[in-house]
Picture 1 (cartoon, rainbow, N blue to C red):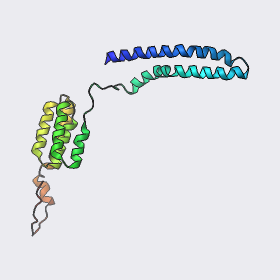
Picture 2: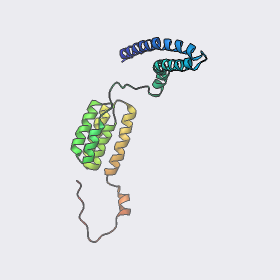
Picture 3: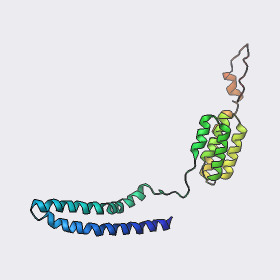
Length: 191
């Protein structure tokens, strides 16, 4: 990465000096013509000054804006590209949950520092596949794989939240919510 930056800087410096070599005669010839006092000298002098300014403007603008560019975009060139979540998300939207799980597992294998694939796998397992055991597997794999402590803690919090949606309610919550129904209705089977 650093070698390419040095090469770019050398080519930019070369570019500046070539443009400066063309701009200097334009500016030096344009100033006396423009200040000659007659219209026939003023217009060509103005044209030469504008041409010289246009020639030198690009390298000067780059030299001024480059430090600001690094200030606002410090990691413009990433060492590793961002994970390709689009295909996995598209499979979820199509209802292809098993294929989406496989896609997220591939992303998790390629990008072991990312927490999002593990959260997505737990979400699909709990809410789409209705398989809490598979969510637990994704959680355990994430805890083993993730190196950052804050990512492991965040994954644990998300897993606990998902698990609370699948766990049955305690007895004291069920007794207040249950109403007596003389005709029991058939229960809906989970998918």
